[in-house]
Length: 147
Image 1 (cartoon, helix red, strand yellow):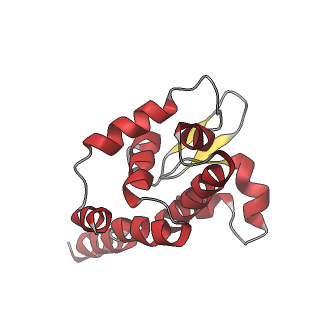
Image 2: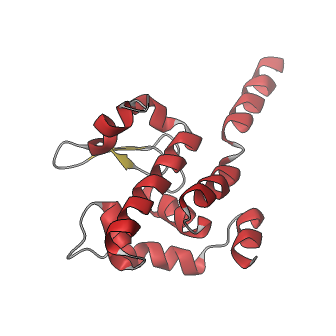
Image 3: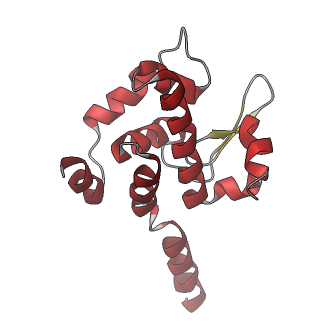
């Protein structure tokens, strides 16, 4: 029984700060934390262990479904594929990807579609915005967005 309690405590401590990671990454990359959360909800339903194989052979990894196309660049910073299953690393990388898209396309639907990998003929932004406007989510973000 003690081992089960210890395992549960370890899991909670490893993933219990996910809300904080959204807030920290949003500040670092100047992205609305609710938008990051909305993307994670659409991408993985907030599953840090999500892994999807795309038709083109690439992989989408972790909470924010970071595409493996980014791995060569991330490797320069010591981030490997398995590191993307860590919620903190994954959220920070997701925020970096979204910031890169915003810098390229502006703060509009094209930036959200860019995050998904296809700017034109893509309704991805609609899914994210639907979540953005309807989510009931953790209180820390509500305070952050309001203030």
